[in-house]
Structure formats: structure tokens, C-alpha cells
Image (cartoon, rainbow, N blue to C red):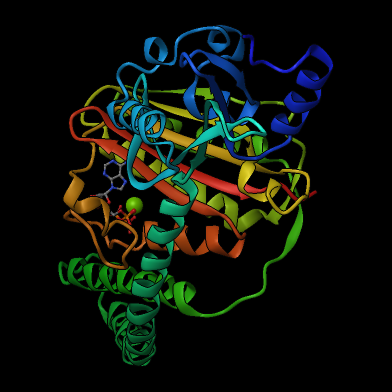
Amino acid sequence: MNSAPNDNLRGYFANVIDSVGDGVIVLDKGHRITLMNPAAEEITGVSRRQAEGTLFFDLFGGEEVLLEMVVKTAETGMTISDHENVVLKRGVHITPVNVTTSPLLQADGEPIGIVLVLRDITKIRDLEDAVRQADRLSTLGALAAGLAHEIKNPLGGIRGAAQLLERELPEGSELREYTSIMLKEAGRVNKIVEDLLNLTAPRKLELSKVNLHRVLGDIITLQKRAAEKKNISFQQNFDLSIPPILADESLLTQLFLNLIKNGVEAVVDEGQIRITTRVMSDYSMTQRGERPSRIVAIDVSDDGAGIPKEQQENLFTPFFTTKSRGTGLGLAICHKIVSEHRGMIKVDSEPGKGSTFTVMIPLIR
Ligand SMILES: Nc1ncnc2c1ncn2[C@@H]1O[C@H](COP(=O)(O)OP(=O)(O)OP(=O)(O)O)[C@@H](O)[C@H]1O
Ligand SMILES: [Mg+2]
């Protein structure tokens, strides 16, 4: 009557299942959960202890697509896959998953349960987004670089002439106000051009062992004064066990400075910028039989204005800005720096609540 394997065998199977990178949940004939592996715990947010012995429907009652698939497989004995429609909700987190339900058969073909395989496809979705963004960047980038080169020379001429003019004007002349505006604005154009060239020119990283928390700490110190004016406080949640990472320190500084500045600018009056560092395991790597590679994730969150959904796609495009004095190059530069470190950057934002920019960089020591 009891269809569960004996204890020894059960332990062996549990080991096999634990070693799989995808989430695996095994149900008996009565749809009670008999096995669940760590990857499934991670994806569903339900612990194995809580799950084993519990009815699947009791635990996942809110996940309609999942329930439908289990019922269908139980009724028809067929394997069903869904790549598109399943998102698991756990609190505010939504994880897109690829689900397969298959009948678990005894040697004689008698069905004794159901096996669910869950694959977290967040990374794949993120990757698709990243590829789309990179495409857009490269087309626009080439154009922008050409333009920047063309502007540089005449701009140098204008600045030089304005400087000469300023020198010719007598001390205290009212006209000096104009030359000073000319120089200031020409300086601004120059900065934009340099940023643009920086964005598009290939370069070599100057790698060294970088203490991430020191870099972040320095930037926070630097930004504190601007932040205090707007009653913004900083909160740091650092995982101090993160070792120094191999990276280009000045580029990392630029990256986080841009993100934190954006956060400060997004807060209207009074708010908080929260900076979190954590280590993630990359489960997608485990499938190639390697140890999971480790990734450092840095979240820069603000409780500012937030970003409307329709704008989120354009954020990393050069010159996309909603600010009157913005150039819209900050995030494009961030994107480039993160790519150069073989990482990813993504945004999570809700208008009215705030935004979180997450930078993920592989941990290479
Ligand atoms: N933390 C944030 N909260 C809300 N909106 C943001 C945030 N970060 C970026 N944005 C939006 O993305 C746009 C692009 O940001 P980006 O940093 O590239 O340019 P910018 O800040 O406008 O100008 P620059 O950084 O060149 O001075 C911003 O204009 C703003 O609309
Ligand atoms: Mg910016």
C-alpha cells in the first residue's frame, strides 16, 4: 500500500534530487508532498520541513496554473510543460518559472505520483532584456561617438576665444558676466562630449582588488552634504564577509556615484537611500556540473518618485532624461561599466514608492 521507497533508498533519491539545479517537488498519489529539493525551496520560498507531508493544494492554493497542471497530469498521465504563464508569488517577489509536471511511474507503469520540475527563468528574462539594451546602445553609441568627435574641435575654438575675450575685458567689466556664462556652458558641453566618448570608446580596465564597501562608503560621505539639504538619510546594509573583488576601482566609483546621485535626485523632500550588498549563488551555472559561481549584488534603493513602467525600458539609452539639467548619460555609462565587468544591471521601480537599481557582478578574487 505504501508506495514510498524504503529509508535507505529514500535517502539516496533525496541526495540525487538535492543535487539538481532545478527545483524538484515530488507528490504521492494523494497529492501530498513527499520530497522537495533546496532549489525548489529557493524558488517557492517554502521550506522543505514545512512542505513535506503537506497537501500540495494546501500549500500552493493560490498558484492556479500550477494546480491545473498537476490535476491534468494526474488525470491524463501526460507530461505538461509551461514556459510562459507561471509566475510564483511570494510576498512582493514575483518569480517567472518554467514548469514541467510529469507522472511518477512504478516499474510496471502504475502511476504513483507526480514530479514537478521548476526552473527559475528570471535570469533568462533579464538576459533577454540585456541583449535588447546592448543592441540599442551600440547603434546609438556609434552615432553619438561620431558626433562627439565633430563637436570637440569647434568647441575647443569657442572656449579658447571666450578665454581670450575674458582676458581682454577690464577688471570689473559687466561684460565679464557674459564671458563667464560662455565658459561655464562650454565646459558643460565639453563634459557631455567627454562622457559620450567615454561611453563609446573601447578601453582597458585597470583591474585591482577593490574593497567594495570602502568605495561605497566614500561615495556616501561625498554625497552626504547634498543629501542633507533634502533631508535624505543613508542606510547601509553591508555583508562584510564579501571579499575584495577584482574590478576597476575608478569605474566602480563612477558607477555607484551615478546610481546614488540619481537616488538623491529622485527624492523630492525627505527620504532614504538604502545600499545593500549581498552574495548570490548563480544556480544557472550548476547545470554544467560546476560549483555555483558566486555573484555580488549591490542594491541602491530610494523611496523617491519611482519610474513609470513605460519609461523603464529607455533608462539606459543615452540621452534619455526627464530632468531639465540632466544629460541622460548617467545610466548609459553605468550600463557600460557593468557590462565591462561582465555583470548585469536591472531596475525595479514602482511610481510613488521608489526605485531599486541592482548591480550584479561575478565575484572573482
Ligand atoms: N532612482 C531613480 N528614481 C527615479 N527616476 C530615475 C532614477 N534613476 C534614473 N531615473 C530616470 O532615468 C533617467 C535617466 O537617468 P540618467 O542617470 O541616465 O540621466 P540623468 O540623471 O537624467 O542625467 P545625468 O545622470 O546625465 O546627469 C532620469 O532622467 C530619470 O528620469
Ligand atoms: Mg543621472
